[in-house]
Length: 132
Image (cartoon, rainbow, N blue to C red; front, top):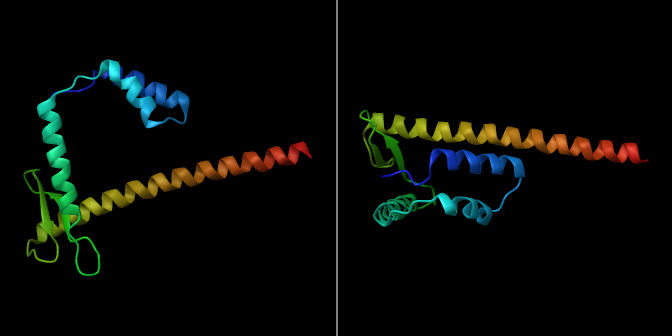
């Protein structure tokens, strides 16, 4: 799969995103469009992969709990496993690592979000205190 965005263009867009603080997806698309190289074959393959992944993610047990998960095998190949049916302990460990990494990343993002919200709440209350 070829690169769709030049490194300099990507850096420019990320800098703009950082400067703006808040941005709409349409704004990012407008920034990307002049620099974007489209490959219809690669786009078709991505969409097929995304659709297949979505279908696999919908596979759930009778309680609505997801059953199939992605993991990387010893060769680094991405595979899916039905955790209710597999006897492959290494696959289960791989799924556990994937879930733990996602959980850790979300936990850190939530901490950052909470800190920012507290900062803003502190600024708001400080502004109210100084205006009185």
